[in-house]
Length: 256
Image 1 (cartoon, rainbow, N blue to C red):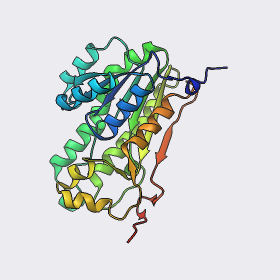
Image 2: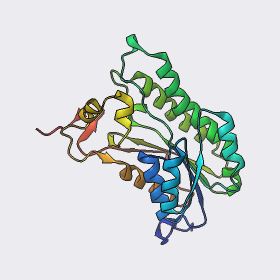
Image 3: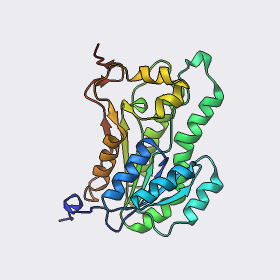
Image 4: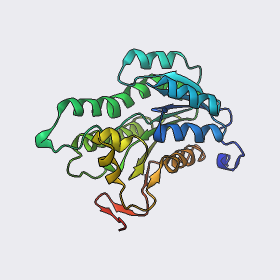
């Protein structure tokens, strides 16, 4: 019988986890959670100052990374002797415009970060993940990758791309010792996601107005940690997680 790694006091002991987009939000929470679970964590993102502070606090290693820059990704790969887990968290939404008013620069950015960035990093680290003998690739998707909605086309199209990327890699790597896990959160309240999308603090606050207990970054980090600490013959293909107040993409209970 395979060992129940989740029963161990430190289920990540001896395993190296790389987390992209680790300077804030879900990425930072995931890095913190995995470090607490005994993983050696490599925190990667563009904002090195924030990374360095967090890495010092959790005992991880900070590496400057721009997932849209191949040279930056190659430098990350070259700096790593071992990789057991890759959490492709870098991503985001950058507008809320209808297709008729599409800003193609925003669309390009959404695909570069969410889709092509994920491909770049995964491709670069896949040899090390294979060599580990029990590698995990986690893709941070979204319920927006499963259901479309008005005003979200650039983001929903990109996250649909992440979803099909996960499905395709799972098919292509089925004979290899690498699991492909997709986490698809619904409404998560973080300090930057809605603000980056709307560009306005008041509009960002409206997204969560009246919602009792939207998810927070630590909730999603908990899902990541659970999925990658299952016995390695168990693959969590897709984990959809929403706050109880959000029954579906268009059905959110708001009090008051």
